Image (cartoon, rainbow, N blue to C red):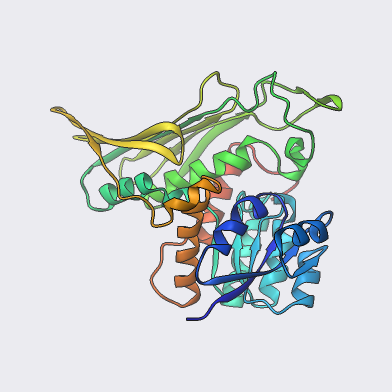
Length: 345
């Protein structure tokens, strides 16, 4: 059974989540890390054989089958295009790009390279999300009329002291819209089974004055994002994310004319699934992830490992459910419609 040699671009989320997911996956071997500021130190600490300051230098310096692009969003386009120019398989973090035109260029490059590519929307693989999708696919909620996704967090309240950096800079892809709303939009489109016909919405910045250990600074990124979607066949969706709340809460509901299914809890990966009709409310017990034991490393690791299962299937040209670059382009179009875009395109 072949093990694929893979390099990671990005020493933040790439090391915190992708590295343990790949290290504990039977089909991957992490052999290289690229990061402009910390690759040598992190590679030594994590026992990664090779370290490089950039994705391009990593591609030139070590033989790889695949690349995980977990760099900040302003680097995604160049890193993905560099990997595809070398005909590598690519997993890219979200948000996919800063602009629709960049997302389109990466989708087109994938088609030319004819390699396996996917986007790290790992929350599709939370057991309750999989069960909810199964209810939709099997027609148990038909006819579908409304998808409702709402996330409340406390991470960007005025008193929160998250450190300054690119995450607080709109031109570099920072803010809640790219970090979280991209997941929620992907989830809505995935549950709907098709891209929207129309998107309306907006971003909001409630707290422009921020504070960290270095003092005060200004932020121009969104701490809330709100959208309405129109799909075909009478289906609509309401999707919102707000990081200025007093509570931590997530709700994902699919409403049909006769029945509703709702997953709710404190976080996307920590929910309980219910079905509701005119007569009763039932809790559905979902089979845990085969990688559930790795949640002790980091809660995102089990669904990320299932995402990499699908990546392997796509590499080996088997049927798969990997979130695609085409899916990511549709998400990017929706993000742009509510204001997440820089420059032209």
